[in-house]
Image (tube, rainbow, N blue to C red; front, side, top):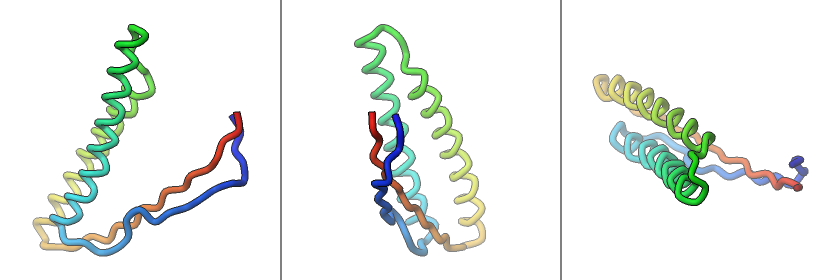
Length: 96
């Protein structure tokens, strides 16, 4: 597949948040992606009898990200801090 020049960018999350708000936003995003990859892997196993290597690997990576985010949020919670979160997504059409 090759990329085309048709790219769209969106601000998914932007702003300052309390620790609890940040926890909710970030964990919702990460846990949703972990769930997506677990279901994709399960479906692959049921249909083809083998694991989806990419989804297995990505779920592990996302679990690590979740652990790191938890540590960051715990540190910020201890200092009663606020967090600035900026999350853009870029979507680019691919040619087959």
